[in-house]
Length: 276
Image (tube, rainbow, N blue to C red):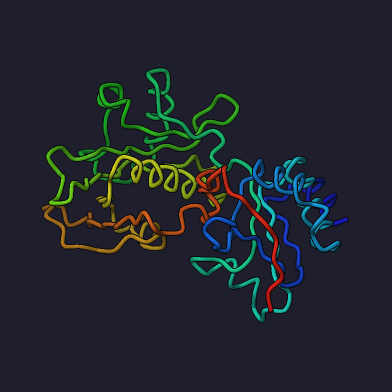
């Protein structure tokens, strides 16, 4: 009933309360709190018969919901007090999450996206200092540094991501700059900006970037602070802007972040275990 209701309602997530079952990787012997849909399908096909009946049923229903359009399913231990709040707000989560590809529509921009990006930045040009918002010609010249979210052929979100030249530190790590983050008003408060930021962070780590710097207006600085950026002294003479930075960690919960689901290894040798 729950999975069917989630599909009919077009829900983003489905939450089940289960017993103390968890999924382990047999090679690392570590708890796996997050697995992509395709890995979950292979797991249930190979080991489904060995799972406790209720856990197997919930696992199957979760996969059915994802096939029907639900983006992720959370399986939470009902015996843990406050488990729902812990799963939602705790950095490392506490349950099992099965998720589809949540990067759908995110890609590097192409020359055909210049007009769409330019239109997205118009509100920023009206509200902010025009000197920090690129013109259409500047966007076209630097198009490879832009990342966009596309839906039904339209650009609904964008950001510019550039690695600073001559920025490697003593261990070879790089520093990147983030700017021009904008989401179409109709799609704001739907996680599109966070999805875009998470995609950028994942690709930044793959390119050996360990620090992302953003110059933000005071109006929008809270959005970055809420997502792990911290305020640093700004060298800018424009007191309308502040500089924020975020240190990326390759050991952070990349595959556990809802918007980084596809980073989970596809070769995991999984098995279920009852704890407690």
